[in-house]
Amino acid sequence: MLAVVYRGANDLRVETVPVPQIKPDELLVKVAACGVCPTDIKKIQYATVPPPRIFGHETAGVIAKVGARVKKFKVGDRVALHHHVPCLKCHACRHRTFAQCDQYKRTGITAGFEPAGGGYAEYVRVMPFVLPGVVKIPARNSFLEGAMLEPVNTVLKAVKRLSLLKGDTVLVAGQGPIGLMFTRLLALRGMKVVATDLLESRLQLAKDFGAAHVCKVQSPKSNLLRQKHSGGHEVQSPRRTSGESESSRFKVQGSRFKVWPASLIRSPLSRGPVVPWSGSFDAAIIAVPSDAVVREAQDLVRGGGQVLLFSHTRRGAETQIDLAKICMDEKDLIGSYSADFLLQEEVARLVFSRKLDVRRLITHQFLLAQTAAAVQLAAHPTSDSLKVVVTQKGEI
Ligand SMILES: [Zn+2]
Ligand SMILES: [Zn+2]
Image (cartoon, rainbow, N blue to C red):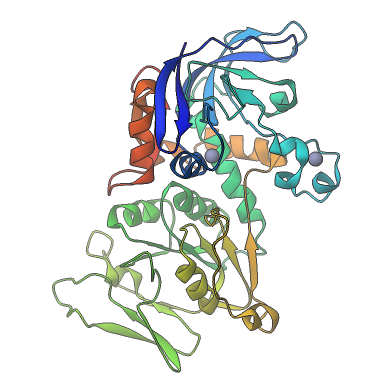
């Protein structure tokens, strides 16, 4: 079969490899679609794991073979896969920190070599310990929707780490596919979402996904505020519009943060009266790998609020933070990584009912042989690209 093999930093090669053999308690799945995930991109770009491997873990497809001892599935079932499943018994699992469970850390899906997901191949072998993570895709839903279960799960897990009350205001920094999922899931829970991004096209979608306010920012280095002054902060208009001078700024008093979101963006986002929203954030979600944004978010959340890191997955990066903000202001700095197995059903309901319509997030599909180009685009998004998916048959 065809597979895209990682052979070293930024080295993905289309190769012919054997179709995986399955054991009596395993499944063989013919891959239909596999999402390109930032965690894999990082491994490919920086060679953080030794080659060779076949990546791709946001996988959906059709069951091609069922081991003799597997009763729950049959050949022809359309399924979405999870490559990590916790044991639910160990110390970490009893604390519901599944990402720290030893079994969870093992990858249970492979197309050959050291198991790494295998979704960038024609077939994958699904090992017994991840069978509980296999979800059937309803007839009305597509493989693309199935392939989105895993990323949506990681986002819902993070949302559940926040202690929010209905009507709370949450900043979501970064409106890539993940940030947009945050925006939607928070809006569905009755939160007032303030969404920021560098790209206007993404902010438009953020509005459609339920953001109460959107705010375009200028550079990833200083994502929220342009300048800081003693006694307050200033927000500079990130984009000149017809009646606005470059230096037009909005004064913010003390720790209160005012956003005139629609005024920062040209129509159609600025339709209707612009009602300035003011107040501090109950929580901030950092869906961009910027340390400056974390520090700014720490200023912007209220005392007792939370800042959640979702995209800081590169080890070894140190940064300066004012620890008194955590200790005295009780602003929790928390992280969330990977999926929560127990949320699987809730995630499937959200996606398959289209309450969270992931179809709008998938902007590009590449054939398996073009996986390297898919990774390249996902690593360097354009104004019209969001989620990139590798498919077996072209557009599905
Ligand atoms: Zn992923
Ligand atoms: Zn465990």
